[in-house]
Image 1: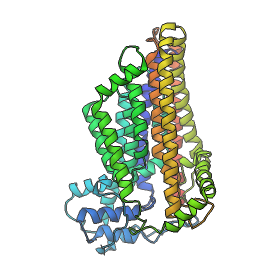
Image 2: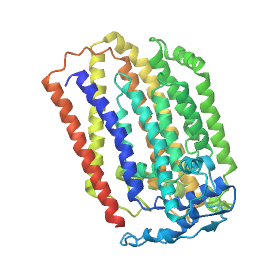
Image 3: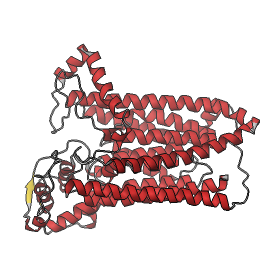
Image 4: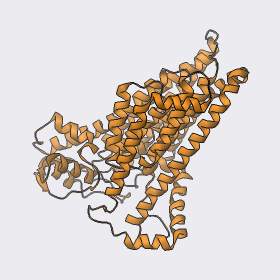
Length: 493
């Protein structure tokens, strides 16, 4: 397959994967019962509480109460067949308790938009359910918008090796569920993906892109600032990639200094978000899951006296997740909705196809560099600096993950336990998105250093290769989507 045919296949699949994310999101939002995204009931009521500014009495509250009794943690049971039919009989209910202690009204943009589009309270249970489903769709639309923007930026560059892998991981059922659900994970995942694009395409961004990253970052830092500790490392790598891509070959040190001067606004934004997130972490360090103070003093004393036990608990749980990548795909719902082997194989096939095509783009750039000694010599210093920046970012991601696990150990793990409780695979999704953004950035730097390709006219065989690749992707997408739908229907009836 020629370079032009390979790039054509890459561009086509970029669009397909972005559209597939929306299709999967709509499917999950409809087939996953209301309030079966983890903690969704608490998030929904917290959003209503914050929008109204206090006590909430509405059909929105009674909708949450109606679905409170269900089949969570009971995978052998199905939903009651009349549970949706009885929504028409609901009466307004009141709620004064603040269910989720973190975040703010902007942590739930889908719910906020529904209220803006429909200022009056729902008049019955059916209207409340419709508003809830629209809120799910709008939550997912935020993440979808970020993914479409990344796809568009990638289509505009010559060889965005790594872009397909980033978009393919977006099809993970777990990421789709946490995007198309009423949860503050949506904003955090959207920011992580936007940050990945901000890192990988420093030479393509507009003022609107920077404003979007800043807005998402501000909300994420005041919601669940898990990425605050890694933002300085992200900034360092972004400066490296930006200097590498923008100017003519020069010493990396001089290029980095010039890049800092040219992007002072971006530097100030990243450091400002870091301070905002760290400040929020400090201000809420004693807040427990119910909104009161956490009883962590005894657990903290135990950790100080037994660091080996705590280290083993943290690394054991996090290592078990990283050692089994399938856990980043599911289970869904309240960790009781298993994915079938066909669904997992379908997702694995899509990821493998994306990796092969991304790898082929990178290999093509490598072959061109092998035949260009001057460009290859200029590449080495930048590649070394970029690799060091990537290593620093990797270490920062690892440290942030351990800090998150340590907070879970202090707040929800039984005193003195040798095992970490409450740490779910979904917590690693923002780190995964940012890690893939770093790989895309490295791929862009290498491909950008290679001489431009000289392609012959596309013939029958290259066109057949494009058709074969698109055909394989279409089959995988259809099988994967149908199998995921069957998993949800099988679980909930």
